[in-house]
Image (cartoon, rainbow, N blue to C red):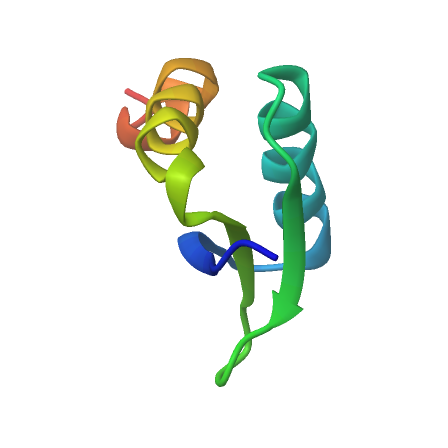
Length: 69
């Protein structure tokens, strides 16, 4: 069994499931785990961490970073 590490923290279930879907589309198995606070941790195998980070960065909507005029 491979060690699982946190690749991201989602604010809610919908966001966590979206990240999980992105990772699965990239061929990476991801698990969701309730975080210590309000969020959910998105976990991947330690060997997939770099690829998972790149997949999330490439496929996440940049709109979150751009304020509406």
